[in-house]
Length: 440
Image (cartoon, rainbow, N blue to C red):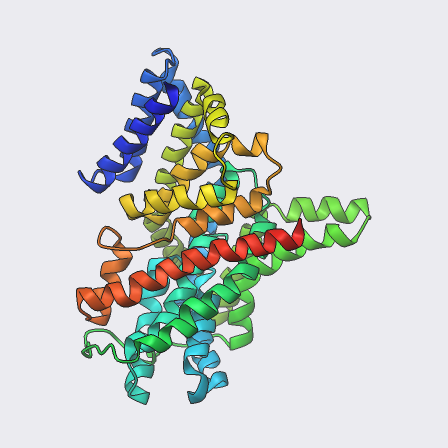
């Protein structure tokens, strides 16, 4: 009976978000309240349960998300993102334009939220398309596939960070495995698939600035090396502190790696580094950099609250004991847990539209699997992340951003954008199984 109640509550959550357009944070809290009541949690302790779940979730990821957002904001406002994009394009040349755009999307996509990366890089796509008289969709899909994969697979993006916290995964290994899976995924779903889209034409949109115009409004620009180092320092730091203990038995080194490798510490170090390299070093005042950070924190506040709301629902499930019923039911299903996670996330994504919300809902339900199966939580995080990218359509803001920016028909949006997102999801789970067979 408890599983039926939980299923009805998740359906209620989906209806609130998808049908009534209720804010996802409020929907999570309302659903947690009703779930607690129907699952038998005493009314006098239910508010404390909801608050505890929200607090525990936010305590583990708030600093990481906020610091990561600030880094992304400074990467954009300093011109570092544009420097990286233009340099990579110069290296690849006309013959490998799409490869250059794909690499740029992946590099810039790691520190930036998806919507920010999209708005930043679309003008570059338009500029290159105009210069070489090529289809914008043909050039854009490889870059946007890279952004999508970074959003769904790689910390410090909100969904992978929250999933890692819920499923007790190692963020450094999630990042490392995510990059391994991401490379072939974006090569196929982005570079190869875009060959089928050469004939999709779009009208030019003069309202969108090209990359040179954006750069000229910034002033003094950082060099490529310092831009790349600053933007990707969290990746370098998390990867290094995760790998060093595997190759050394020195306890002091291991303890240092555990301390410095704590994601919040790495992100703080990265933020301080970027404040100097992309801010003060570029003759910007500390006040102007702090103003950028203030704007970034305001932009991410709602995302943080949504993640906290998912934590409240998870706590209700734990306290009510519904986890035990879920374990009993899931262990009877003859399907691999990674595939089950992918299917659940994909179904919720199709219903809700939000990749982050789909991932959080799925992870809360699947947590008991880790206690009963010999699973790698890092790969389970990536399985949920892959599923949460499945079949972007009319209820996903990204779908409409692509359609309106590229000025293509609804039919062509489905043929290009929706198919690309679905390919990313399907290829993701395939490469997760391949990686699982190699490392286990």
